[in-house]
Length: 192
Image 1 (cartoon, rainbow, N blue to C red):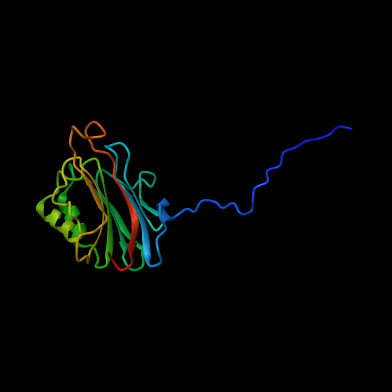
Image 2 (cartoon, rainbow, N blue to C red):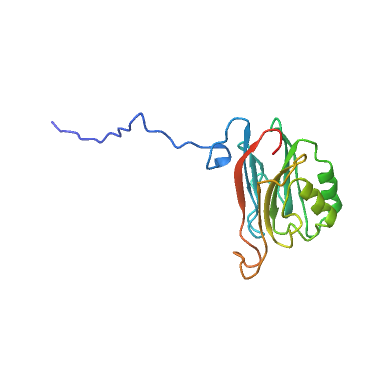
C-alpha cells in the first residue's frame, strides 16, 4: 500500500481582494462625486488617456487620440459622455478648436490632455476660452509642453484639477519633451 501526501491550498475565507477604485484611482470617490484620471502623452510616442467614472473616453487603444489637445466632454450633472475630439495644434486649423470650445454646453465638464505639441497654434482667443473653463496655465502653454486639465463651462474660479510642465531642454525627461503628467481625483456633480 502506498501513501500519498499532498498539499492543499487553505486560504482564509476572510482574505479580501484589494479594492479597485473607478479609473484605478488611489482613493474611492464619495457619493455625488465623479472619479476621473487624465494622463498626458509622453513625447510623441505614448498617447494620452482620459478616464471618467471607470470609462476610458480617449486612449491609443480606442484609436481616438491625436497630437495636440485631446478633449472629452461629459455632463456635469449626470456624468453622461457627450463627445470627444482632438485638435492638431502644430499644423491644424485653430478655428476648429475655437468652434468646439465656444459650443461646449453649460454645465459640461471638459477633460483635456496634451500630446506632442499642445501650444504652437494656440492664439489669445483660444487661451481666453480655456481660461474661462478654469485653466490657470492656458496663458503659458507652448511648444511641446505637457498639460492635463479638468474644467467646467460654468466654473466661477480656477479649477483645482490642472498640472502643467514647461518644455525645458535642460529638464526634459525625453529628448525634446517633458515627462507625462497625470491627475486623478473626484469632481463633484454639477460642475466644480
